[in-house]
Image 1 (cartoon, helix red, strand yellow):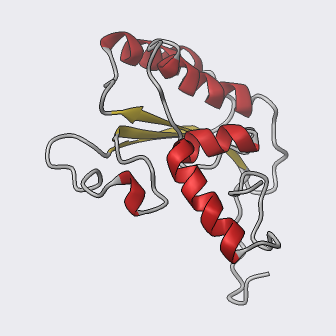
Image 2: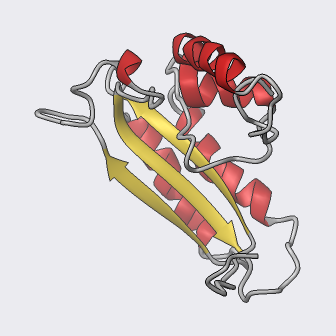
Length: 168
């Protein structure tokens, strides 16, 4: 328990989509996305929202450092989108329909843009990703291998661990 007495909790499911600058969202993708919101979002029995952050574009300072400069590997991102579905009130049970709705938001974007290598943002953790999926989507192979080398050197006993952690 936190020493400050903090006791605010939320029961939710979140999923992210990182859109690369090399493959911006298309009219078809955006139409699919907003049609999904209009068709399914107004009928959702649970609260939900999407956060759409512009990371790239002309003069983006987020994308200036090299991907190898830190653990943050989404330097090629144009958009970072988080989808979030939650229960109406703290303590309410988690209804199973939140997950497919939130996944549908992401799928409506990604399925309309075949051939695009979408990533995910590691601060918008999707607990349903396997460790291998999380490593690929959050870090990419090069960054993950670099972080794994560091992890093995400084935490060989895996004290700092979670199901999607480096080395999991």
